[in-house]
Image 1 (cartoon, rainbow, N blue to C red):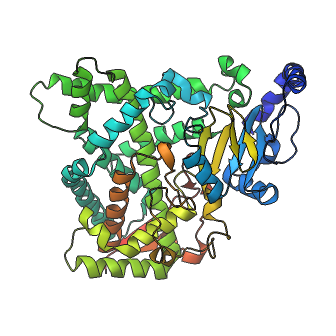
Image 2 (image 1 turned 180 degrees about the vertical axis):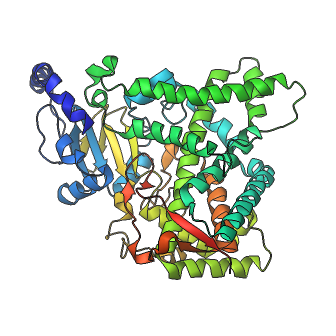
Image 3 (image 1 turned 120 degrees about the vertical axis):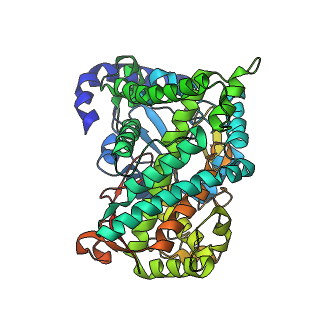
Length: 495
């Protein structure tokens, strides 16, 4: 892997420093009782044990041996891994305040994004202002109701595109199609403008930038494991991330400038609301902050939402009986000439169960990343200050002690209980829990369900190239967001 070639270059110097400080520390302080974990090597810790697997699966395998709370060392970073709903509840509710910060990858700190990012900035007065603005200006029920017509128009455009593909018998890339629809839904909500089309390739360029950003933040970076190297950026990760950030900032700046020039603008969208906030006397939100907030909203919101739609369609095509059951419910609820809308979601319990079951198997964020800001006692163990704390959501979703037949796609299990996305049931937290819970759930909930309803109500679907459902490749590609390794290609079919 990339980071292994750097280890020989730093081993000798770092070993001397590490051994010296470890020795002094062990003589002068009482070592806390850390959770158990696998034995680790000097300097590199458990990197070799984790580096050959997908991280969420590697940690799951280790937790079966060392327990639901364990310690691993990634380079010099002490990492506490939680794989139990009970312990996750203690971490995300009881100790929420002490574990609410993030351990920030060095690449993410490009252009000081971490200092103005809702996702990465520490819990503070400004962070609370960000959350409040998002809750009231973007994600409140009233705001989402007022922007529903924009999203419905994007679904009509999606339907027109699918009808053309249906006539030609063309297979579509479900993930890319979902990305384009979600991108335009969010860009219209924020800016009252489209950013892509289904035929121009512009959405693919946008998707590539976001994919590269997420990959850069996820892949191993020697500077994250040995912080003394951060000033050198030895793998060039921060420099590459600066270019990706700047690409999006340039786009957002042009939209903002154009809006400012429209002195009589009556759009009344999110951008107008944010610009009005920046003009208020003594406003704590600047134009610089708005750029970074838009970056968070686009990267996190579009990628996770489109990935969830692709995984849901993949699971339904992989399980034709579930696909048939979902379509039957839609036809019964919407009738002959229906048009899925937000208010229909509550009438579609099986579709809701399908989405929940997809998120259980393929959570948007397979691992929740936190950082301790104080020493915490948890389950008889001590989580030290400045430790990385990982909540393995994927592991809990595949735990046979929590779920019957955890590896099977069984939406019916969610018809029998009341789990939702609010983080109350810690066995099912696809969007996190506690104060760091994803603020965009209300919008994602509406977009995912109405887009799936549009895809499934109007068309039956078959796999491209005569592929059989049982032969589908369902392998996951690990990252901040879980994606399919092989894109889902399917043909819309009119009955």
